[in-house]
Length: 394
Ligand SMILES: Cc1ncc(COP(=O)(O)O)c(C=O)c1O
Image 1: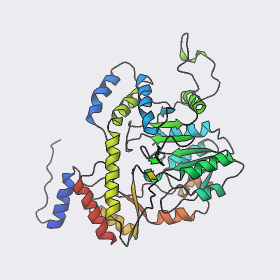
Image 2: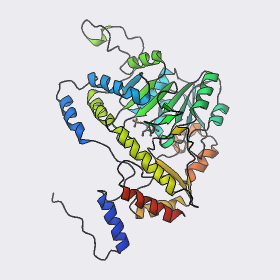
Image 3: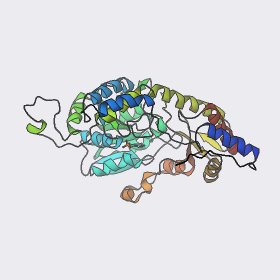
């Protein structure tokens, strides 16, 4: 197909024309909210792996797990085929089963809560703190019953939850703490990397995360016994590392597992991504701190209330705005993609039996919206976004 040049209509008002030119200088027709980061340097190791004759779970998976360990400050890394599988595995390792209760948040991707249902357990939604979008630890404690087996906490947009409190609750009631860190790769709490703080942390390496393996995820376990059991359960329950006389399935399988493992093709992409993710995270954070400074005193915009005892990975830059519908339309008109990103999960019919009163969620969903913050923004685009937001919200 013939490539057509983009030509601006001559009659276009000069301000709009300038804005459109700015946008095009960033390489697209609108500034995206998410973008796949894929360095070209992946091509060589990827084609080598593809042609190596071994594309299943092998040496690259092992190398990727070793390379991930310092990022999560934990050696017990299990790479998997998705973040959703990581949550399933965490629940299974927490021995969550039929009739048990798992406390979770409704303000997340459905992938956080579907695994609870899949285990036959009951979702008990705790409220959130509308000032940061994270689970409200006081409400978590109020909702604990004899049947509570685990708590899932999501770090909204990459901003860590109140982990000290959650871990205190976990210890007090002997309940497992699972961090859904799908947004939070590279974040830290009290100087410790997310991944090193509680019983389980799950990560997603799906297409638009800070780092991607196309699809993939990881479960990081604090307890080495959980890690060893997880290693079996991610591949049917079969020990891939044990001595074998002939084939892998000859030994008895004690406990059923899943087909959740990662393969070498995804892992080799992950290995290359790790060479760049530090810079990707740096750019997200730099853009976020620029916005935080620009949006400090706006009458129609509220920044999320972030404490400086933790470092967000800023997968999202969420703000709360007056007249959100109008704000979103104006941003769209200006060529800037914005979104609410996740719907409150209790609005879905599949979860209707778990509905309850959640005033914090009600407040947050009323006016929250995320604006582009990622590595792909040029300084000019970042300034343009900030100018547009300030113009709409002062
Ligand atoms: C909060 C949250 N949890 C879990 C997941 C699931 O991750 P995956 O798509 O890798 O299964 C996502 C995906 O975006 C997510 O945003």
